Image 1 (cartoon, rainbow over the protein chains, first blue to last red):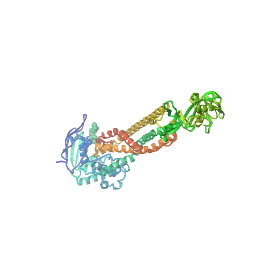
Image 2 (spheres, protein in one colour):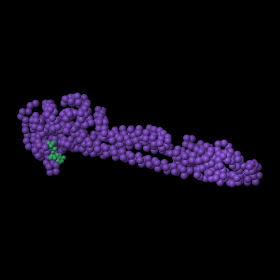
Image 3 (cartoon, protein in one colour):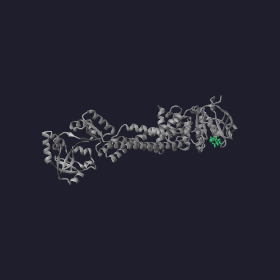
Image 4 (tube, rainbow over the protein chains, first blue to last red):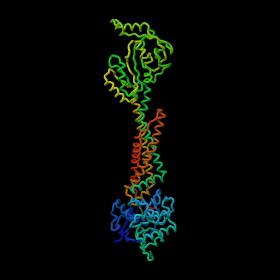
Length: 224
Length: 395
Ligand SMILES: Nc1ncnc2c1ncn2[C@@H]1O[C@H](COP(=O)(O)OP(=O)(O)OP(=O)(O)O)[C@@H](O)[C@H]1O
Ligand SMILES: [Mg+2]
């Protein structure tokens, strides 16, 4: 059984089909990239996989559970327990320090544990900046806090929507290195990107166009 | 336990690090709580303060004889004992007799001068109050009619008709007393001229001793005027107690005075109440608007928290927590400033200091927490409506 399976997913806004009959599977531990032009439905799909939205048609099976039928309350619980989110705009709480931002995720999941949160920050190379507010951190550093926060509760799937969209080359590479490490550790990764360099390092890339699945590319030269 | 700690860490960080917005809300609550605690302090102190002020307007209770007999001094004293010492501002016993001055009939009032001074502080004396025997205070109108000046003398003659009648029936003692008084009369020195704006300006005032000597009868009174620092209801209670003593004393409230006191107090308290209510409402509106803005400002953060798995309950708890904490701190500030405010008002208006009522502390804090909580209800409801998907949609 696949970890995630989308069966004939459509998302319809009025007469706009943001997603149009999309089907694909993601195996446990797989690293998938999603590409496509602006407005092709990438974020819409991530919202559905991340349990923040429901498809208009079709089924989404996560760990064998059809999340397209769940109430918004149980979606919240599934999201909390199984999903790690990384955002283009980082979305750190601006009045909390780096370590407190990581602890917020622990807080909603189970128990805040400052020591564990510090370790997570150390893993992304931010041990020294843990007590800084987001405004005192560079974009790359903020994104690494965001990654540490996404990983702190050991999610089954990490979803990243344009994680490098706001970063320069050096920071982008740093984030890619973290993803590689996550993949080696067995984390399932789905990364939306415009950037071919970010897509190239994934095992497989699917391309959306006008809400349809246009292409699926398996990366032959993928190396761990 | 850890979870609670993180809760407080988050909401205090929000209040402390996002200060400018929260400062406005805190200020609104603190001002509201200041007015609240200040006015409530004054509200409870006003009757006491005003009571003292009102006593400048004269007696509010009378003790009269019950029946035709005069009051005896003993029963007047017994009646006075009913009234709490600290509430009794003044007691002025009076005895009225008809006398003649230069053959003109005049009413002579015998009074305890200190009591009269205390019970009727508005009396104006040109000259001095009588202080030794054989001194008289003459009403202004009477003085003009008789052409009497301060420092002059008057000859007061007592004519007792009943004594005359009794004399006819052969009562020797009384007729002798009558002869003494009627023939010669007594010389009194006019110590001052009295202005009251009332009927007292037609009377002369002498001491009770002089009256006793003049008439040959002691210890009898016509009325006792009381100035008591008490509400109308308290006065009624005193009156009932005195009536119950059954000592030939009939207590009466001076309705004109007690009722206007009650009216003024009721109006004043209603005003204080109204102002407090309006201020609380304004505080609530200000807090509600601020919280509304706060929630709007933090839609992204709310979306993020939900994306991280926060339930609606946690979101409500966090925003309410912030609001209530603000309410509590604002309330505490309000208690401190409110006391200062009440003290300043009291010093300026009533010239007396106010004592701190410990009950004001929990009441003010509780009310400001409640008001803030109420004000936060709607904004916090809005917060739960935020869709977590907003965080993935770009700006
Ligand atoms: N709530 C909504 N109501 C109506 N239309 C929507 C809504 N959300 C998305 N859309 C539309 O659905 C389409 C897909 O949007 P989506 O955000 O998924 O695009 P995307 O591939 O993420 O684009 P980008 O690369 O610019 O982020 C767009 O045309 C968008 O206007
Ligand atoms: Mg997008």
